[in-house]
Image 1 (cartoon, rainbow, N blue to C red):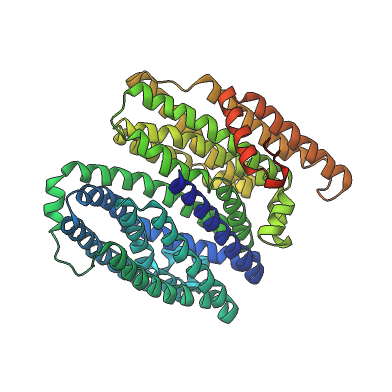
Image 2: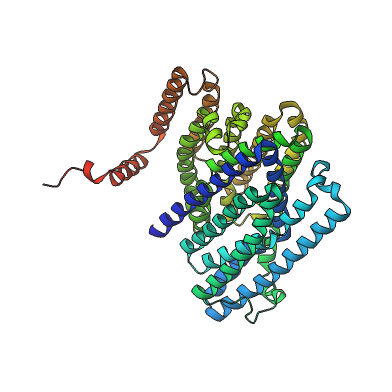
Length: 494
């Protein structure tokens, strides 16, 4: 529990670092400049995700297996994947550089003017890819807290470099400084892994082909996960390009702010899924136990999400001013739609992990690719009709398509259904967030009537969710409250 608590605290710090970076960059660059930077960032992220072929995540399976075989086997596997990823990263940089030189329009006509900046930004791909490998190497050696700490230090260094770069030379300085920081963090992490785990990147390696032949199922797993991850990444990239081209750079910046706040609402829940639920569902357990664990986790996630989701939906203007600036408040009226999308995403993701735990990775990948592909057909008309709100509607449609496919699969093949209490909490959470968005139009946030109405609504929503908790959950909250109570507030013994 101490390790898991440490991971949770570090994740909160990572979230705060990301918020500080977004706040400073949005203020310094403004909505238009921030829209350009967010589009370039997503291009770099998509390049990385398309180029790494899911190897960093596949490496975790290999290294976790080899770790039990001794240090030498673990080190060889680490060095093998390091060299493979470094080669892929360099190839990715070369391909994007060639495209920028001969086919610059491929990245959007509005970004042609930022071609040199985009090239510099892509130079950060190798550091980003290798950082995932480094983090997973520590996790494979059963050092979860150290893994999270290294990730936090790297992201903090990159955020600091980005802020210094913007102050020095605007958008161009941002990516020059980030690329330089990436080199230093990569070198520093290599040194740290050698010092703590005794693993070297120049150690004698096994052939990657030999490694894959020894465990051919990993190849299938990697390709399927890669397809699903690529679908998500390409969809987010396409959304930003559509918004940038159809609505302009300022709207792209507003969209990034809305997406950033919605993703922040799930920033703590997502690693909880990865660190708590996913490993448990992949253990050798009966089907009934895995289904029970998924239902229990989903219920608890929704109970947590309703608090943050309602607050963001009730005070969108204040949240945007705090995290960005007053120039981003035009998106306040539709922010609750993005929070609803993130709620649906967290709900659906629990049961997608259940499918993986039941060794149905193929359906997970195909259904994910299909859902994003189908709803991608509606991105352009929805954005044209509803502007930024159309993005949230399209993303929510994706989750609903995935949910329908997943329900049918779980029911028909495994005889598993989602618990009624999970459905009830999902409906309540979505309704509470939607109601909060509607309540936000009653009166201005900072007026006395507006603030009073919002405060009352938040209290009612949280009290209603507390009523939906089962007795064991209420006891857990009561025990947590007692532990967090200040020492002076506790009754003296005797």
